[in-house]
Length: 393
Image 1 (cartoon, rainbow, N blue to C red):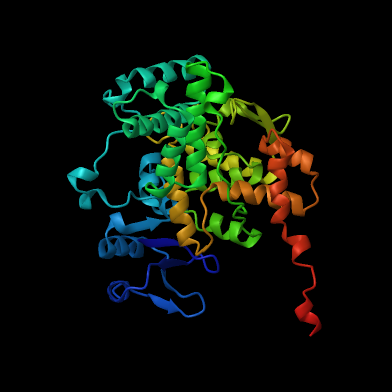
Image 2 (spheres, rainbow, N blue to C red; image 1 turned 90 degrees about the vertical axis):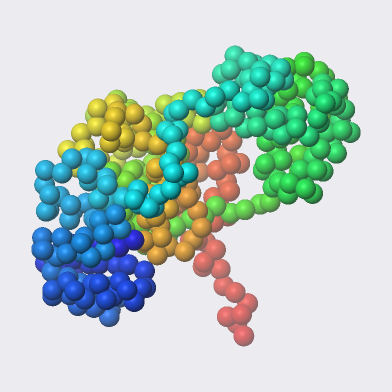
């Protein structure tokens, strides 16, 4: 993928970036006025319509990723879908896709499968819906019990003993090689079925949880966050990423944020039906307000703050994750992590700035202070100042 954006040092130039490729170097040499920048390790071409058209012809429009400023400079009447296509082209290109790669919309209702008609699945699904569990919980519990049904074979689940289920867990560990977090989902599904559906006592289903690894969250430095925002070509996604870093919202929360949730007078942003169906408020700062104002003047959404270009539905989580993954790669960030790392960075940077941890707990929507306290293990302002014994040698 070739990335083209206006040079930060000289607006009269365009910066052209692409992975190390001899063929790409040969192609870019056909652009008049091009030169290689040894200090920035990129190609520079004149900022003109001729250069933009020539690059599109040489590399192919499907393989070019233009910065939004370039798109609006040379095509000011571009529609929102056209801007999206130019700043975040579909990958792989539609012309290179096979028939098997074409998938139906995620909102397409799949046909009822064999195990969806199983009495155990129907009974558990009905209880989950009555008690208004989230769709994600329903999906995970359902898949966990389907795996158990396939393992048990002809034996009914209500006849399985605790010893039988222990053997099943051993099968998941040794044969399936499931991680501790996945094992917890299967155990929770089993306990829910035993307690809520079969209404049995705890003695029938009490299973110990596996030991969980203690992992530290991925946290970006301020420099890396700036690089991430600078590498984002689309104003829509740049605003989205800034909002996540500025408020600590989760992926599903920012995707379903409505225009009515913005309180400009009180300078607050309301998060509705977050994790655990809980509402909360976060701050709306000056820089974030300015970024949202500029975004609204360009895109003009109608219902949700970040909408699909074709309709007024909330932007898909997978689309955000894909753009974020590409942007991290283009920014040259080596740390592993998804968009949730911006939430981790938000909490850690607040903690390093001296913000009370109880306020951070409220902003993140944590029920327990213990969940928020894990960010105390990754604060750099204290650990980095500790003197090592090696310094005294």
